[in-house]
Length: 361
Ligand code: ADP
Ligand code: MG
Image 1 (tube, rainbow, N blue to C red):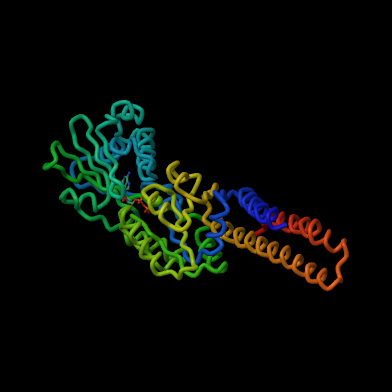
Image 2: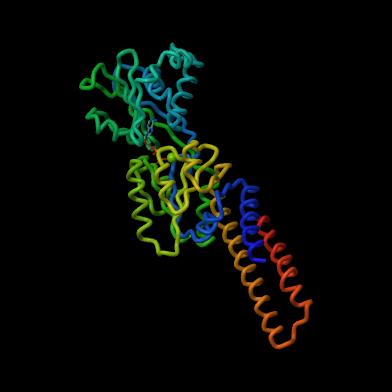
């Protein structure tokens, strides 16, 4: 009965989870999910939509707004970071509105040099176009390259655009403020997790402190670490891992853009399947197909239910057998007791295992 019902419970649990849009890559991860006490989140693309919109452009030179956007678009042409997608989109809208943007997005796409381009994870982009050097990224990128810039304090993710003819003559020509939206069910997701027994939620982000705290406060995460590079995220996760009790597990949830290493390092890595990159979906142990953070609590609850059923079956199957054995020893059991202890118990355990497939809530 146990040999049949235990794997069957896990299959049923995994099947039930996938019917809810949650792919769990094996029974081991179900066992870990059932013990998760800490959930660590990435921000962009995980708690927020990763659907940035340009809300403001500040100019620091005689270059116009379309010029600043055009340089940004040139640099971001080959990136699939949510920021890159939004900048290209904003430039496209400018060209359609005919607001001083002369080259179409297609013209730029055909003329960029795909080899002279470097994506600096957690910082931004470096590109060369028509002999000009272009840097597009956050304040850390500007600091690292010793480019002087006027810090923009607006609430949002700030992307600085710097252009020059040689490495020691690069000037910041403007900043673009882009804003992301918090996913509608992020707040509920955090609430459901704490109701379900997750004692701690943490946010790790490469974005700025003010925006990180804004998102965290809004949805109810108190442990916030911002302005992290991909490597820092791994260090912070190590720190979290070292503080939890041995029987409590740590899950990391990310979209994989700049956080694949953390996904791999956590006890269980959960990736957003819609927005996420292929590498992340591969590195993750669990994939949330519809990108809804509230499905994390669901995945944990399905795993807990499945493990409960597995334990019930083991106790039931072995318990009945021992009972019938004792009864047989004292001469109280007939052949039919033995048949029930074997086939009957097996049948009931299978029926119980199939309950793992159904999950409401
Ligand atoms: P998060 O940790 O919130 O998911 P990321 O690690 O993806 O964010 O990015 C961290 C920061 O690095 C961004 O907020 C941005 O400032 C900068 N950055 C990363 N990639 C790019 C890019 N392609 N263009 C501009 N800035 C970028
Ligand atoms: Mg991210």
